[in-house]
Length: 244
Ligand code: NAD
Image (tube, rainbow, N blue to C red):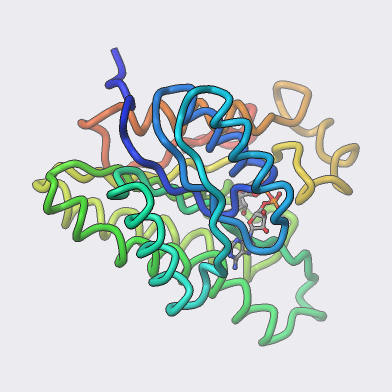
């Protein structure tokens, strides 16, 4: 039986669309109040928050670039002010700049590491003290099959997601005694705006014969959030594309 998430407060980064939006809605269906972070799509973020409120949960949209220290500090402060605390952090915000080796620039590399990896570090550093003080917390990092496999995006993306899984294990070990679990959920080939142009090329090589949905990734996130004995793990949601 999974633990109820009723009255827990979740912060989901990059939740105006795609996988983040599906996670925000699924956590709300499981009973959590949700802070919906977004970078630039305010109308979509507000729509996600309104959908959550229609489910009977509390929700608000918060603009912040989670790759920037000052903005993360402001985001966490605002969410804690409006919701009282943060119990569940989902580091979902990410970018996938598709680049061949010859066109990959230092700027692409730095931007990818900042948004995909440093953001998770910044958000985790900002929320774990409160979780530790309350002896309950769930940190869930949205990694990718690219953390272990090659994938199609590029070496910079592989590095960012592999780093995220290292971060997951590093925090998991150090927070295990404090009631705080830290896990990764690693999707591959989910139908979103990020993978839009790749749909036809991809579906044929996935063992289950289709791409996945944001809801299927969100189900794994809710499962992890409801389990206090699972920590430092990566749950793959990939239609059988690769195995641990
Ligand atoms: P998406 O582009 O729809 O969602 C990414 C979200 O992150 C967007 O809303 C974007 O605005 C937000 N974001 C980007 N930079 C940000 C920043 N600096 N601050 C705040 N928000 C920011 O793509 P998605 O497919 O829903 O991806 C969600 C996560 O899942 C990403 O981390 C991605 O790497 C990961 N992922 C996706 C797939 C897939 O097949 N779609 C596979 C593996 C991993």
